[in-house]
Image (cartoon, rainbow, N blue to C red; front, top):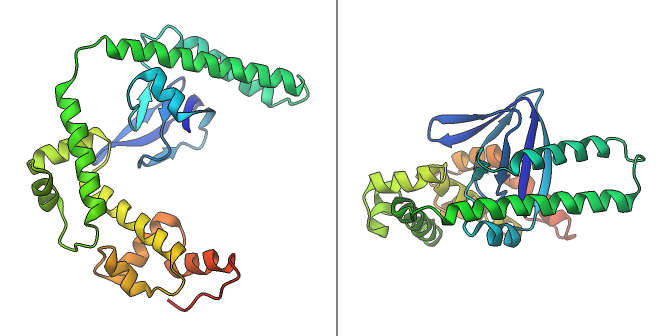
Length: 254
């Protein structure tokens, strides 16, 4: 799924590039991809309305990948109408007895259809623009770098220089490709490594933690454990016990 949101109050800060944050305030519409890495920080009074949309339908309507987040441009004449509809739906849902369940379902479907119509309109505007060759090159380098990282996470010496050499570009162009995705090279590599170790913990009940972290490119087990806990809010050993206790297996000590 992709998630369409309307910020009704407060603000959200998101990482726009290395060392930068973008403030998104009241009335902003955004399209989020939950699978893309990004840090979000909500103000204490922030309130949003969410609408989940089928990924393939969104991609078909837009005609291209939405990126980490697509802020709906002001030129979309349907954006204010959709914002009003989302706000009204949120108010109605706070009083669940106001309408029958079938009536809520009808309104929700109408809201979804309006969202898809707006995205289709934005897609047509995108296609009417001249092709952005630089953006296409950045996207290609980004995807090539991701594939190289996934194949070589066991290499402890893997860094931006090695990745740039591996995909045949300069470090400057590599950094630019990742900045376009609102992330950095080493942040992405760390995330891939952490996700791989988490997956191995879930699959291998008797794997030694030191061997596991080394296998995924971490040279220091203590640093790995701290990174794992910071990312998943649980220690590797605790996650291991949690996963394997659900299978009625007795996990070996890590």
